[in-house]
Length: 114
Length: 112
Image (cartoon, rainbow over all chains, first blue to last red; front, side, top):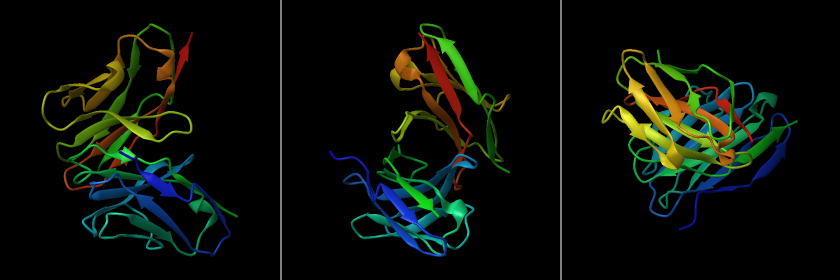
């Protein structure tokens, strides 16, 4: 069974632009969660989607948004990029809600904002 | 308020000796607790999780952790370190109906 895939793996953007990251969960998994990892702030939870609905949200500004499609694939969008948005963005999938099931992480998308 | 504190940012052990990675949490309610490992250039992998069942939790690769409510601790241990255990370890707390909170990580070095 294929693991969690994230595209693209690397991305370079400039301040003010917007970016969309994609995550394909393991087949059959209905929950997708997104995390941001930076050297300064560590790993922080962004949000979780389950059956196309946002179930949980971390403490990030509204510039960070996401959605989930009927096939459980998820996208995360960041608008009006800031230098501080440079990070590794990780996505994880689980059969059910993340709190109740084991999460499987993808390799991440490394975003650099110049 | 919810939080998790990993008491050591870096731990160094000799191969074959015990490993102890310390984690304390703060939560208003009985949370679920997790330990994840991140090897260089690889994704996070779940080692073990506590969800209000047995207080001693056994995970993969010989790791285990004990939930101690009175001490609000969830320390990770392994009897004998292997070279392949060198990685970054994260303690995670998930209060009921709330988001996941990650510790700042402990970097484990294993000396041959």
